[in-house]
Image 1 (cartoon, rainbow, N blue to C red):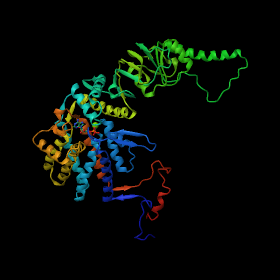
Image 2 (spheres, rainbow, N blue to C red):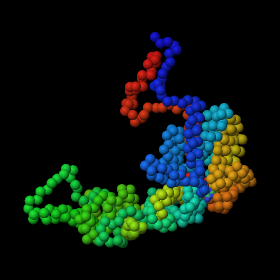
Image 3 (cartoon, helix red, strand yellow):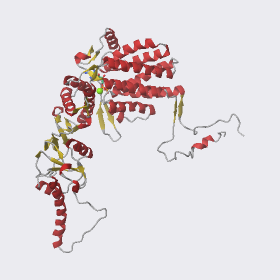
Image 4 (cartoon, protein in one colour):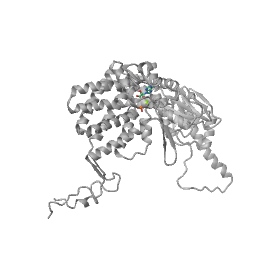
Length: 545
Ligand code: ADP
Ligand code: MG
């Protein structure tokens, strides 16, 4: 019944599809476009991007992960590149721009090979061989150091990569102080849980007003003026239910016919709050941090008892407070006992700008510390917050791992040289791919030079010459705008950041290279049931069974 020439429709008519070379080319173009978009932000002389959303809110940033996260990216492959930045950010906190630029360059180099007729499988194999060799070389080139001066350098490099106008020196000393404060020795290993460092911001003042606090800061004031402003040796109660009388779902009307009963009604309400406060007092608490509201009358009784109280504390802060002070978060006041209370050295209200904030200092176990960022405007403090978070992560990683590499494009130039030598030992077509990998690595020093306004070609030639002479730590010296020794200038990056950037760039570029078909798929969130294909079968009418 079926003629042999009848076409077989597997895909629904009109399905969008790109195949073979075309698909590969488009994917590479999309990835390159993303990498190109953020290239100018790399390094201390990099430019910033201003992101404007549909309602006109703006973000000004130099952070690769932030820019890509905020960009309205549509192309599926471009989205994969954005994922690289995210994964780099979650894993190590820095090196996001580098990872994306590398991925873009690996694809650009691959494109040239594809045009010469080298198959994508050969390219991906070559890239894999190269990245394994590169990781080995990175480890061999790394040096160990965890002293404070080195940690400060690591922080400076992470911060100056973002914004050279920041007071990086001062901020770096705060970062190192914070990381040292929360570092712990466990089974002979140094562990830094960066979750114990809380970064807060308050605009107003200058960057130099940024402060390190040996404890936690909550952006809330005490609820009643008559409460004490300072409580020494506080016994802290964390309550996550409201100190209010529950409003009924249904609107209720109370009719009081006898004027003498009004007082009785009010007294009854007031008694409820009195009992609440008595329960708190009985537990021994003299500080109450409440996640919900506190009624005016309850505030009055708390003040009368000399208890310091704060309302509407953020849930995330409550959790940090519980961890830092050892308090248990209590919902029912009947469960509030002496051993559910937390301890610290001091709870204090302080005025910052025009706002009052609550400082909980001297928390013992685990140590919790904060950095309160100050700066002229919202945009400034937000960008500092992002930079500080990166710096905290890299300093923490270095404190734990201790292995460092020279920055400023030095390690990439060194790797490129070593990978070229390695390519010769491999031979065959893979050799071409490994050489392409080495060329791709040079995008980092080249872009750094470009962004500093230096001649990229001459700089790269000089850089290569130095590395061939055995000057393995030579990179781009931004202060003098020349090729120089990064160990002397003090520009160092953690091994883990470089290693992860390489790995993720290779992972995504090889993944993109292996795709030879892009087919529009059914919406996963659509109404169609996963099993049945109500509309989908239509095009398969000619299927012979
Ligand atoms: P990423 O998101 O990849 O961290 P950055 O914009 O932070 O991007 O730039 C990081 C690069 O800039 C790294 O290669 C780092 O070594 C280099 N870099 C940072 N500060 C300096 C400096 N003062 N001199 C030379 N290179 C620097
Ligand atoms: Mg950086």
